[in-house]
Image (cartoon, rainbow, N blue to C red; front, top):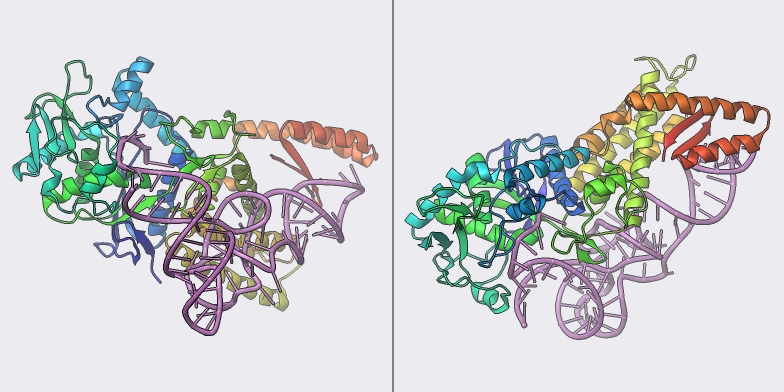
Length: 506
RNA sequence: GGCGGCGUAGCCAAGUGGCCUAAGGCGCCAGUUUGCAAAACUGGUAUUCGUGGGUUCGACUCCCACCGCCGCCUCCA
């Protein structure tokens, strides 16, 4: 079976077929960079990251475009609307571009930590003013837009398909409209594509209609088509952007070029807190930096970035995710279980030379061979289950359950000294492909010792472990337990095993 | 008011007509192991899927009604 994806445009789950046999073009609405990324961004971009990773796993050559909105995103659609970036910049006493650059870097830093692959192209809206002006020109030429006093509006009445993505019609929208209508608009449903700039507006550019700036929806139309052509395969974004943002993108691009804009629309659901959407406006967001450092009042501890990733993957991308510390804590425990198993596995693999049985003097018997065949069969079944889940509109929850199956298998194999190296290698390969390449949960670092700091720490903890071992030998358990308790307070857990005492951070 | 979605164990969550007397994770309980722990492994933890009707040989899954919750219709991943 091939990949089935839910297409918001047709409201059906469809078999995914790219325009070109082996290539996929995907555009995802990126962040407006006027603040640090929060957990809502994590859900969105981890979800699309997995989509891109899985498409590559399936063998497609993917071009992944994700824009950076650094201009034109207004605080609201009314006349008083202010540019979000400019507003934040004034508050922080920075040039808007300086602020945008700062938060762009912050964004990539957080996404790198979440192990999201970088987009192939990260176009900035401010770097594509010419393309946007060109698009406005075409709309005016074709009569889909009109100019009033230096601003240009899209004429919704000329585009009958307006509303096809979000499933609404113009009359309905007007009935529930909560926003003040600009007197410049011919029709209240019309939307701005280019805005005249007041003299004190910092971000402005010359255009055939005077000094002004592009509106938010315009950039995605211009940039997606510039890099992916029209039509292109997949457009992704948050559900809340179906309307008006994506609806307007469709109107602009299809009106201008006369062909379909996007074949498959993929929308991910929201992160909520206490049942309410996490968002900038409500101010109820937890930034990723806060989550990683544990510095938010709702958090009981600092969380590893990949625990956040695990949390996102534990539910479906089209389901809302109600955030709670307990939920993230549970995800963290689950993530640790997986990474601990992989670490043990890789440590064991590194310790035994190629081609040798795991323990000297224990050659793999015929019985061992049978066991190996059974395990290889199990691995094959795991892979099939994983692919079926991912093919079913990216069921990452089930995909993760396959990883947990592998964890149990791994731990059992590691307990059995007779397990051959090649069996362990096969399990490791499965972790690398499914857990690493596709889900991005299993990383290279899972096997490595860590940096300089970690080595120093390892020595220090080693000294204490040795002291505790002496105490244990002398049956001074009170002292042994005291050392363990002190280390526990410092976030270091000791584990006694047959090969001596190991430590790990909590 | 219009449009869309959700309600599955203590918590998170998959399943959406018979393989469901319902995956997986967290938590909890017990066993193995341990000086005691931790980790790991094994077993247990929903006869039931918001409530009430209906369709069907058969419903968590389809239909209707009701209750509760959420998103969009300004900006938001």
